[in-house]
Image (cartoon, rainbow, N blue to C red; front, side, top):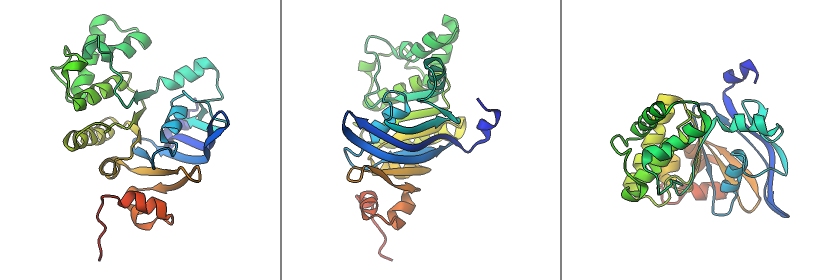
Length: 259
C-alpha cells in the first residue's frame, strides 16, 4: 500500500462500475467516492441497486466492469490473499443482524477475533465485552439474541462488525424493523462512533429520518436509468437537485418551507 494513501480524503472510490446478475443489468457506470471518517448513504427506491452495490463493495459480487478502490488498491484486481487483507479492514452489519442464536453476545462478537487474530481467550473475552460496551450493551455479554429487543440485536451486530477495528463499516438497512425511538438511538450511535473512532460508514437505507440524521454525503441510485443520478448532502439535494425524482424521494414525509 502506498504510504500517502492514508492522506487521501477518500478511503473508497468507485469508478465506472457496472453490475449485473447474468444478462440483467442492475447498475451502469456508477462513480463516487466515500470520504474518510464520514458517513455516505446509498439511497433510492426499491430495486434501484443499493444492496447490489453494497455486495460488490464488500467482495460478494464481482463487477462486470469498472473498479472499486480501497486506499488506492483495486479490490477486484488483486489475488485472493491481498483481497482478504483488504476485507479485514471492513466491518459489515447485515439487515437481520445475523447473530448466531446458539451463542451469547460475547461469543458472537468473539468470532472474528478468534478467526483472524492470535489473541488468547482472556484477551478476546475482554475485547468482545469492550465492543459491546461501545454500543451500549455493557452487562449483556451473557445474554442470547432471543433475549434481546430488535434494537439491541442491531447494536450487538454492530459490535461484532467493529470487532477487528475496521476502517470502513458497511450497514445494510440498519433501521429496518426498528420502531422510531430505537431507530433514532441507532442513528445517534452511528454519529457518535464516527466522531469518536473516526470510522467511515457506508449505509444502505431508504429511511428518510436516518438519511437526514447520519449522512455527510449521499448518492441517489435510480432504478429507471440504472445510474447514479445525484450525489451530495441530502438537504441540498432535496432543495436543489436538478432531478425531480431525487427531490420527490427526499421530500416524502419531510415538510418543505413555503417561504
